[in-house]
Image 1 (cartoon, rainbow, N blue to C red):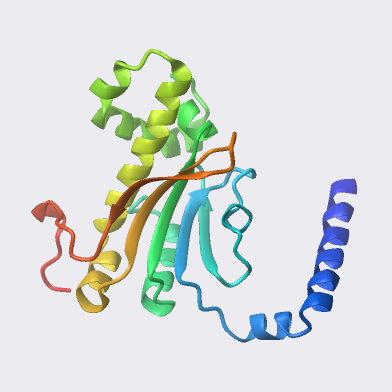
Image 2: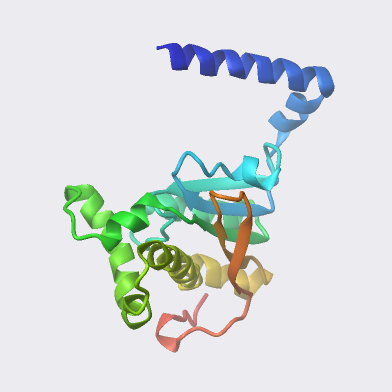
Length: 211
């Protein structure tokens, strides 16, 4: 219970410090949220979106899961995406992975991690299969895992563009822009991996023609 008491005390200290430096901060924050960015990140506790981007509460709308996956049957994720795009009108959607991702490392192995995680990590194994020739040529385990982290981000950005939510927004509002980033745990820096912009071409099989 000591960690819980510590966290609650930290919250009190933080709130008092913020209120002292900006007496109107919490009053303004309570009125409305108007973020320009939806962040799809990994649940890893070492990758908090606000801390690594230097943003304050209200600037980034956040969804996190293991290995920052965009899964078309994940109702939790889709509800976040729909709300962010259709109601908050975010201008950017970022998929941010990180080097040293435990989920990616587990997906690279052949170990059984039990039913639910096996199903979840299967999505990353599918990414591996798409790039098997490239990844199989990498002999260093760390480099292979890091490259799969990057490729996984690229594929999740593509998955975003395949949703009717994004395609509808592209057609009618010309937003959001999609970004794929990877964060380095060893240096604290974000690497830009890929981007997709409104109107960017998709394979016709994934395009909706009546949005």
